[in-house]
Length: 502
Image (cartoon, rainbow, N blue to C red; front, side):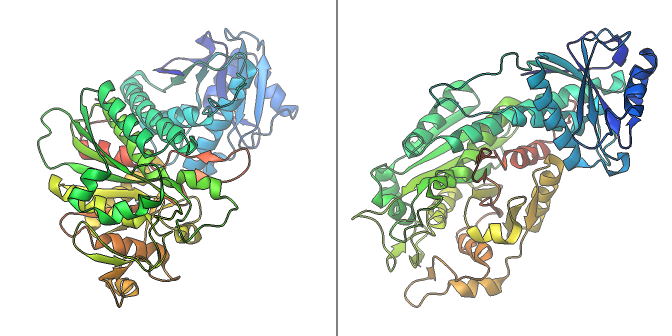
């Protein structure tokens, strides 16, 4: 969809639809009051009659409003003015886009970006509107024999800003929002693909194609033979039960004179996780195609980064494998020698993501990184702790943790920091190896991070557990969320030092 920004009076807009807000109870926003005055009290008369209360998400589509150049006016309930927060704002935008898409209005001018959202400026409101609009219109129907299409879908949306001085902010917001939206879409598409299509080789091919599309990106793919030569025995063990070869893709983005140490993003890419010999229950196992959500989000972030053309040096690692039960599969009781030389006793083959990541985290030492962030659908325990709303964050470096939390708040893609004290390391002790791959039932998210921390001593590191936020389960809304692409992209925007108006 096409987005643009302008500054003008609502009554002068010649469009298929004008979108304005109504607060509860039956109170027009300042922009809506302007339309009411031009239309000789038409809108206020409707409100007095009880056609719209103004509750958040209510919609009233009007045709042929007196003295208006536009064909339609959409009144949008915004709730109580003092209670309009970030979450409600985005919900209102999503509902508005869905309504516009069903009315036959192929274009619209939206004045909701002039609503007051506490502590948020025009840039934030426009950018969030772009991302929310793209998210609400997303569908994954390319594998359906008859996908069906909206007859007259919304194709163009213009956001109005209060003054011409804010046009620059609005244009920056659209550029950034579109880049994030494209990254989120790619992340969703990869996550939603079935595992018989999206396997490690598919992710490697996609990584190579990304380098073909963008001059700022180069890609290297490492197969099982090279992994064996590197001593990545832990990574290889996980994929041993699958006929699909494990592959690790190294996507390097470099722009301008970014000659400093790189930022490294490592994504867990289990394209299907049956649990191995420690087989998962059958119910809901289809959703284990989403166990590559970390890799998909790293891929989406690298795409967004290339779209933004930020002056940075960033390396994205797609650590892809498939965990299946087979005569050649690794077993509980096996002891693996990792690339770092440390040994791991396998107590559960379904705690496989950390076994792939630990070797990937050792591999990236060669880049002498400024910092490393790994992203993984790692533990069901994170869902118990934080539900499906907030990503778990653990880090050995306080400044990095604070930067990520700040970026998550800016992007509306929230994370929460969990502790990672040394006491938790004791749960990983093994009588036969340097460590076990699980630490018992308690604090499972934290002990998983403690395991990874043993392989990250040579750089600043943070871990994002997205098990609860990478996808939605069940029903018609089932599917990848595209998180945490917005958070990671915002983090990189912040690191670049680029002004939002550039």
